Image (cartoon, rainbow, N blue to C red; front, side):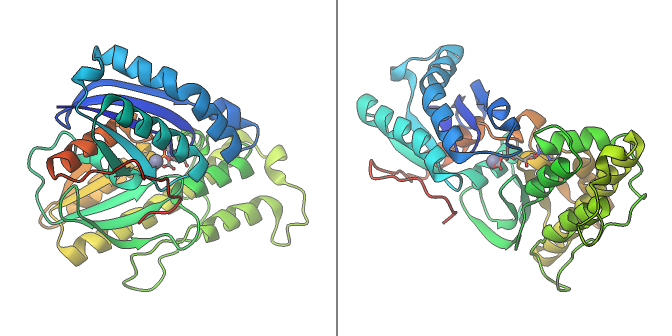
Length: 341
Ligand code: KG4
Ligand code: ZN
């Protein structure tokens, strides 16, 4: 069964054809990073316009690369939430149009659940219970995963998302956009113990996250407590900047790993899933693997392949297959939603 997946929730226009939820026949991602670079973040209006320009060529290329025509497609899956509403609207409208014109079923996909799908795509037998951590630019959430279709939210960020903190700290350090990969690269040459940035754990058994404190701590470190001092970043050596990046990254990773451990202990997880843009971070992948290995009994870690950590349509098409099999379809009244249901 071939599913065409469409993804436009933020700044990537993506389409993919995936067979039986597992075989990637094509994956096209048109990144808008260059367009948003000078603003240091995604501008919704610009994102929406760029999606309109790219959506048709991207879908066409995905179909050509997969060597399929409309008659080979069994359903169209589209991310309709959460994300930037005017960006999601472009993908949703394209998917509804194709569904109507080609007379194919339409499947609505939650973008966050799709991120976790990319971590379990190649797994044949998911050993339950499963704790899942999703770390992206807009979300940081822990789930108790009963099956690909039944995630139960255990906790989420009460302020900034982990990826957002990476992006904001990169801006403070005047590192290139997008921030996450820049911080990771810069941190590689730094000392993670150089600066003791705060690790916000919230209450003893809380599974929520807070990352605004650490971002502010980096800002104060660079500008002084009263924010009246000159930004010291311009006069800092490359080593000092690398040390800040490494110390920040290590603090964020420590919180993510400790909270995931808490969630895993709470639900006695046998498997941990990791997905979302920040899951591409090697330091997080390594630390989470070490935590899983040292647990008694050891926990199996499933991480999305790096190319499917950041936004893509493979994860949308793959999850679409399981919704198709479960008979969960949308109709032409489908609308984009900025927040998750
Ligand atoms: O999942 P994603 O592509 O989009 C959202 O759904 O938000 O995640 C994008 C986020 C950005 O904040 C980006 O800086 C972060 O993922 N990111 C990383 C890395 N690669 C992407 N953060 C840390 N280390 C990375 N290597
Ligand atoms: Zn995403």
